Length: 268
Length: 268
Image (cartoon, rainbow over all chains, first blue to last red; front, side, top):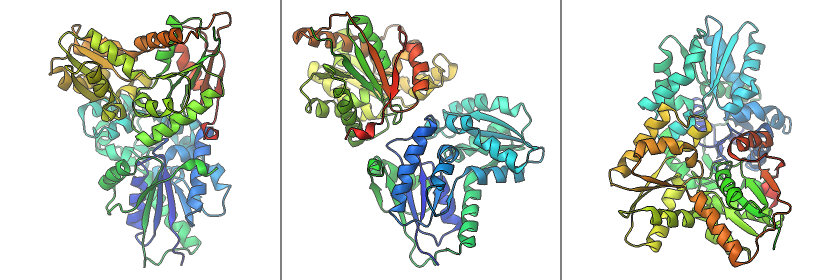
């Protein structure tokens, strides 16, 4: 038994969709969530910057005695996972490998679409990981930079969002994909609009579910499950506490209790 | 004569529209431009965070021996100008007061619209400054958070952008405004789309022109014009140099020579 918390981090609020899934699948586990709301978004920024931000966040999470870290942000998983995982002894997992595994299991015709931020797409990480899993897969990628601001504007089911999704997706749809990876933590929040555009025959894969499964299997291997006697969920952000609390309240199934603002610059 | 450069800063690339205007009106002046591309955007973040970022940037600009600072970002002008101006002896000007003055001169019916980021609108700074200038003015404001991502997607003249602009602007248009302040440095880049939505009878005011005028008048008052013998434009960013250089090349009339990446965290 190990009642230390799981550390989860994201560029902002999107990673709460991953935290939600971990809470569902592993209800005995305590969580320390960090959202880098002062520096969000990550998706349009460079590899070096994302590595430097992720390293600071890992140092912060280590001060909370976390027993494992989940990089809930696709862009940080693409750019920084390998680097920061090499700098600690605890397990560090990202969302890309679990998402890729799920997509490989879901596809029947071997044609997989990936939509994500500019950074994640440019890194080519999904494509590389998918082809490591199954060299026969064909992968078609598209960056969709307007999806996150559209979600944050609250226009999830709007005709404008449908029109933009249609425009982003028409190219990769023309390749006959039967599976589409939602490679950014915000995208499950517009899942219904995306499904409407791609049609019911395309399976949407959200890495959150598989990431929680992967975490469970690591906790099992290392025999470090919590006993569930005292489950605590603590939230930290780098910008406004109130704004985060409001958004988190709409995503999480539980009460968002403690939210604290921390300055990442002290974790160099 | 004083050949020290003018410091200009912005959350990213938008402030280049202000830098461009300063280059036009004051071609003898050297410029040090800083774009905080690692932490962009500012418009959705809190006052405290923007003050802390702006203070670091001012400290950085002071190391370049600037003789004056232009806060080219509306959100930073709204939240941080007063604070950072009180922490230095050199003149520090923002874009909001010049923009407000221009709007007051342009309006005939006293009804002025202001569009800007969420932060600038929530700060209510444009409205306060406009009413200080002329208490009879009526001000109608609207945050337009999707405009910046639309510009960055390159969809300035797209039907989707027109539809979104129409939706954002219909409320403030219903109040019979005859003048509209483009209260975010990105918005002049979609000026034509905005003009099409509001019609030719509404005057669009971009603070960039008036800000350069205000800077000129300060240099004149203090008698610190440069002699134009050696004009240098240096650019600094906190994220990718190459991405900035590409974008800057599309906005500025001159060759973008030196661009350097600096880590703001050392300026605490």
